[in-house]
Length: 371
Image (cartoon, rainbow, N blue to C red):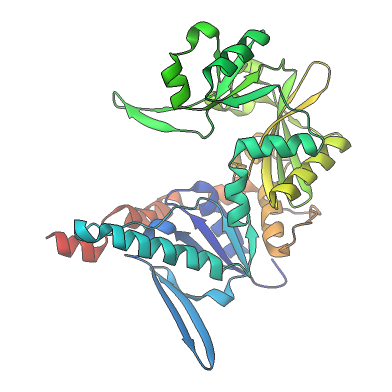
């Protein structure tokens, strides 16, 4: 139980299990938590910003309660979605409504800036850009694969010719529906003969990297200055030499692993350069024990890390991190940490699912309008 109660704002979306469990864990520890869906605004969430001579009164009203913005101590920028134009708005007015609610949503974020953000909005968006990450990684002492990010056909073909094996990644992950299936982008090997014509190469810039030989891979979750690293053996799964995320299961790990101090210090520099206070780092460790940086995900998944290796009590650490409000947070594992397995067992997904279901249905006013 925390010494001082916090009010925590979780920016997320329906059915986000990380946010659901965080809400349950923090409430157990005596905190007030709002799990806020950006798509609730403006139909299920209302802003009320009042300014008078006596001062301001800034409130957010949601279906889960009414909150003064000044009450929020921590904002977890978990999965931020933009506002949704109500379906009953006349098509002629949709552009106007879109502009107003987008600016109002941005104003809400701005007015919450006095809270401790995990991670700050502008920094999180900047960190989504892999070209910037790679530039800073070199400056911060992290080793990276030879990389080309380009839509220039001549450069792409020359890069592939220079390296014995090359992989391709999208600049940002994508998913789409095809033949009643959901397809997603993953890392894939690319050869000269796999390339489309120059027109298509120019149309979609991509990331091309020299393939790195793997001894094993590492997912290292940072909360402040605390690191929780998991050793992953991708050779145990099909397609693991390309992308272990395609078939995730706990048999892929031999447990925790310690980062070499120079790598740990470089990770802290990378977080600070990006303006982040938390992040999930991915590394390849070569047969020569070189640690090759791939990326840091500012909102990476971390439930699986504790599920695969229960000695890494990430959820307990996350709660302490939220309570600390400190970018330089250092976790001191208590004698009886909160365990993720116990939290999952005691959390009722059916009840939460019913609550989230409300957000996936038309708002009552919209239903009445449509009728």
